[in-house]
Length: 218
Ligand code: DC
Image (cartoon, rainbow, N blue to C red; front, side, top):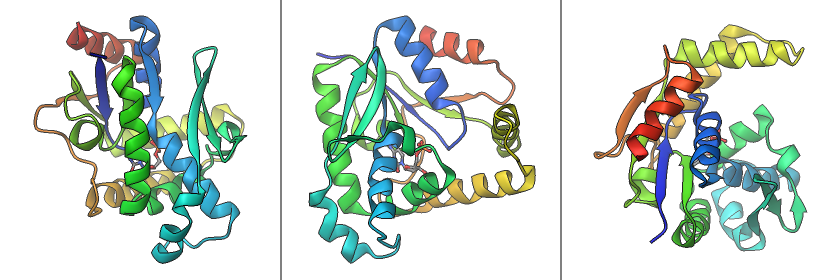
């Protein structure tokens, strides 16, 4: 049986940085499920489909092919044959992904793909519903969180480091809104699975979090 590790938590808690480091250290494949929701969201944006038009979204879901491939250990997301890895990291796509991931038709499609991947491969998968829905048998399940202030500060520093403009209050407000939407939706809301271990990274370094989770895996 393939080994499956689940990491769930709110936006900006550091899930992908942590999961990538653990995957490298443990020889697992890192699966970023948010990237799949982002690829679907990019399709809706490119095709000018409104985020609240559930009927239209349901009617085009079957035309959307999302897959992932690995190049030198890095996950690439393919949308209808095109590598869109470089196009999905914008705030616009992130917000669209949060808004359209509420729909059952979107989730059913991506959950199936995620489960297929985990069946045959040792994976560390991050998202919002991995421990609760996608991989209920994952072991361990980690719920990684950090305070809103701390997550906003990390994002703020990241933007400044890239030489981009940043407004701390706006970033914090966006994070709060995204948290609310992700955890109050009807379908697979963000929540800690009963058997998940809570890790609050607010006052921890990346190395500390990585080592703590590796100790749980071992
Ligand atoms: O982790 P991320 O910011 O790349 O995810 C983008 C959005 O996708 C997030 O706001 C909610 C949605 N998402 C989800 O509903 N379920 C997942 N397993 C992963 C992401």
